[in-house]
Amino acid sequence: MDDELIAAAELGDEAKRFLESDLGKCLLGMAQQEVALAQEKLERVSPTDVEAIRALQNQAQLGRQFEAWLLELLDKGNNALEVFKHSRQE
Image (cartoon, rainbow, N blue to C red; front, side, top):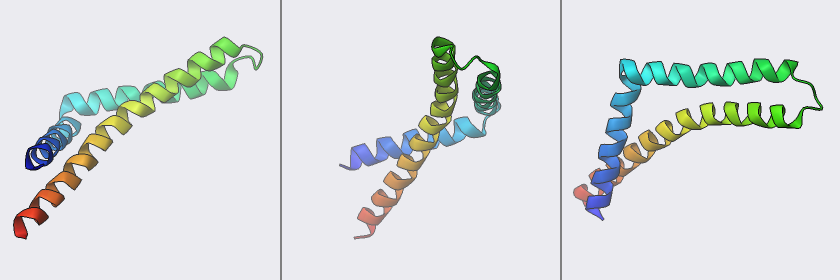
């Protein structure tokens, strides 16, 4: 159990460092730009062009998922660290 908590905490710490790095900020910004671009295009696409609408929705969702995945790793890491600390205090 401790090994799993430590691994999750370490992965969360790596996610945090990545998000704080220039590369992480750049990739997160690119993902956010993809969402904004998809939303902008979605406003102009023909409502009858189902394939284009689906593609733009997927583009926006992928941009959102990238950020969500990183934040999920960060949260899981923080939670694991707290559980690990609490188990050590008992």
